[in-house]
Image 1 (tube, rainbow, N blue to C red):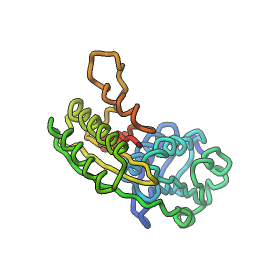
Image 2 (image 1 turned 180 degrees about the horizontal axis):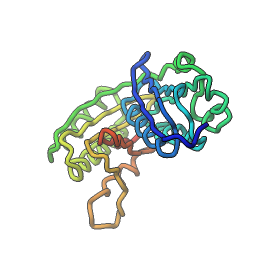
Image 3 (image 1 turned 90 degrees about the horizontal axis):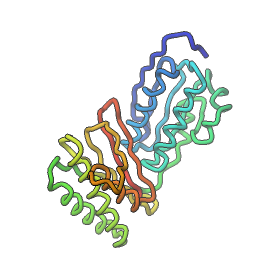
Image 4 (image 1 turned 30 degrees about the horizontal axis):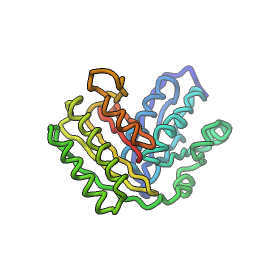
Length: 247
């Protein structure tokens, strides 16, 4: 490890066997931790079969920076539930296998080995629709979700929850962002339905005080009550975010 050199990091992504391979070059340390974290989160939102991170050309300035993989895994484990694997190369394989991250992240010596150990995901249904930044969009979202749930033959209770969650998230985007497009996505996997809404704002959503007269964030309390779990993934380099709820 080297802590005295200037910390710079370059990341790039390519598709390999329906997975996203992230190649990393440079120094991973305290000042570049966020670069890798935000890039992995950005790639995960696209819901590839898996994220595989190649560290073979990386110098690890401090072992604490390796917690970036645990952090990202915790952020994506519920949604989009994308597996995260690391290919260390011969330089770091023993180091990473001695750390706690291997409890959450697959650690392999080579990229080919990591790709070979990616499990086939459970069957998934997925639809998406772009809506305008317009007061009519929450209603359009409700109609779209109800129609999709009918096509997927989902129970009435789950359908009603999904309709309400989508309406609240789209309404929140229309009211509190300047995003020209609202991206609505529905995913069904292992009997769980995920409603995700993306916009062109990197400002995170915050639960407001339910007793406050202000409207900002109050709809999120409805989402939090109806969802098994929910969250927000920020794509800082792209200036976007996605708010999701698993029902």
